[in-house]
Image (tube, rainbow, N blue to C red; front, side):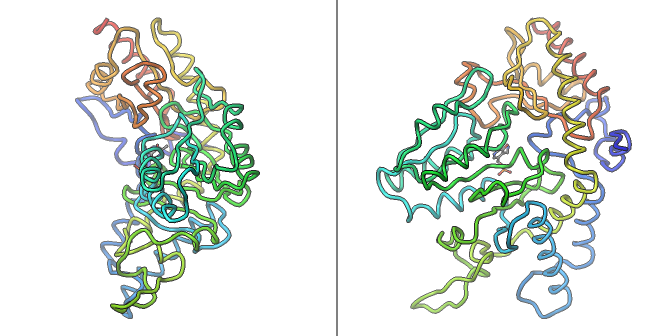
Length: 404
Ligand code: PMP
């Protein structure tokens, strides 16, 4: 049976103190913590087989290559991609999105339309704006309601034969809303548009099946799912990845180079120029193993319990408002205390050892929608406990007493 108290033993960082108090880490939507199993994988790599991959005949290089390609297979299996070469290892979600945005430069025409949503992280807005600047394409935005849900009627109204691409996150990092991506994908495909889903927030909580979703591109970061920073993945359907030109030129991504002409390597190497984050890729595979051993559904059920518990307790605090009140959401709670700046609440919580995020969460359009400078965001993972939520509630009450 799942017990967070047992799981916590896997996370050495949870034993540390911050400002004289035990650490209570509630900033999981920004970066999740790393279990010993993943740390051991990293130490093992640098201790035993650190070498460059894909081009060495020597033993270390072959061992590193094998482990790196095994990690790709683990990622393929986890996201249920049809082919391993549809998994491009990148430095993270942002890098993955930029590969696609850059690639579409030569595939779009002036007047073509790109749809994003009002709930996006800046990394799923800015690259498309830059793409529009390069191509003369037009950016359209699916609006949201006060609960932090996307308006599907409005989305239907935006779709036309001019729509070439639709980009939506699976789960909003600022509010936790789970977007109806199945419907969004289906509607986009009916008019022949390709869809990229930003899964940075979804992959720690939801088992993704890219074939079942029939999604064209799906992107994620390892550091949101118990892996290291600086590594992530781009899934793309084989045909689309073949059509997209490479993002960066360099070693590893070529078939043959002469000064007259260079030909490019096959997938996935066409998009993996230069020495990759080898250790990171291998540790990404270890993180997936770790999460699957617990079970994503088990994780999601427990996190929902924490979400319900924390929501109820927070709402008992007078003058506290939660942003993002959709019934379909994950364990992210964005809130403010009336008349108090979120930064001040975050600072007092930090003094108590409680790590939350404050600010606009790289989603300024959402903050503008609510006409607020930012929020305090507590985001829970499967190693958090109800006792920690009680400490958060006490901390917020303390902040309220001190600041209002
Ligand atoms: N999209 C979403 C929804 C995110 O939450 C994040 C990370 N906060 C990103 C994109 C960017 O991820 P990364 O910084 O790992 O590239």
